[in-house]
Image (tube, rainbow, N blue to C red; front, side):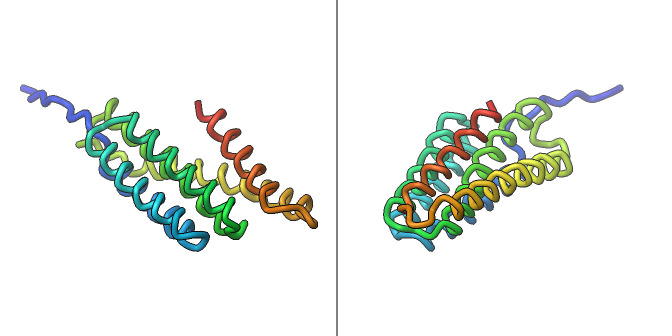
Length: 168
């Protein structure tokens, strides 16, 4: 006789760990820009952890928005392009991994070993983000000859919007 168990529809442990690690990297990169941006990153980590604990997509979206505001603050206050790009990649990666963790947990349950699935998803997302950031960085170098840093920040915002649009 086969014993049936109820699926625990909670975010996966692997996805939660990967997401919080990416958010930590984003916050570290934001710390190289301004203190205000870093504080936004710390608050975003707390919201991300709460969203993953509760299984709330709304909290995950608010955390992602807070990381985005931290990016804008870092860019507006003169943060380096490289630090902002690393923070942007890690921010989008953290949000995407958290969303994926919720989806996989809903479908397969927390008890299922999903490590390989989530690592492949994370690596693929990271490759797409790194290529996008490379294009943004190259355009920023070419276009920023005498241009204000706001132009680079706007290019970064455009790349993030493009990736977010493709994701949905």
